Amino acid sequence: MKLLIVEDEPNLLSILRKGFAENNNEVSVAMDGKTAMEMIHNYTFDVVILDVMLPDVNGIEICRRLRAAKNFVPILLLTALGTSENIVTGLNSGADDYLVKPFKFGELDARVNALYRRSQQETEKIDTITIADLEINGRAKTVKRDGENIVLTAKEFKLLYYLAKNTGRIVSRDQILDNVWDINFDMNTNVVDVYITYLRRKIDKPFSTKLIHTMKGLGYVIKP
Image 1 (cartoon, rainbow, N blue to C red):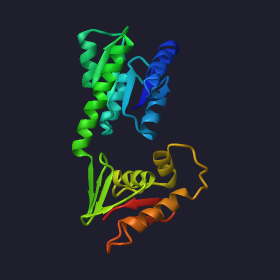
Image 2: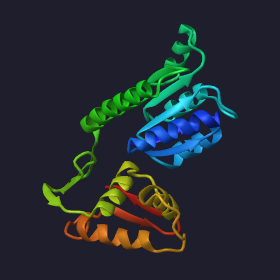
Image 3: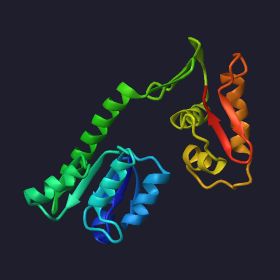
Image 4: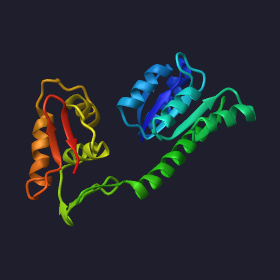
């Protein structure tokens, strides 16, 4: 799993990071609400483990903002406030689960895994994107156009899927680098343009209707 742990207590943060990393998870951390929001906006996580009491923006407000923005990443709240009223407030803000401090790591790990399994099952049901005669299955990693199977490399698929998730919306080269390559490339690199060319050869060239469009000076968009 790709996990984001948002916790401002250094010792607890270190323990959680170490524990989840030892279980072969990819772990990112944030120590305040503002940083957490930026990371969730810029990167994709499978589960967010979110402390309620945070500097800048508290965990409840983060939940509300994410759900208002239609971001439904699974969220588990960590709270020192264990009253029924506080728990209800957390769940009503959009959290999927909660755990009251102090807690045992084994229970937290089990709850996070349960959230991940549930989200994967839900994703499998809905994770097919259709654009004109193009069909992309994000779960199975398959692509068809006009009923014909199209074989893509892993990076080509990730690029196509990112464009498809933003159907009708222009995405810049920088946004593509951040979301498809997940690392800080030299912004002068032409890797995005090269892979767009690869995609066009497979997705557009054999067909009469073109779906991938260049918006000069802005980026790319996929649309009918």
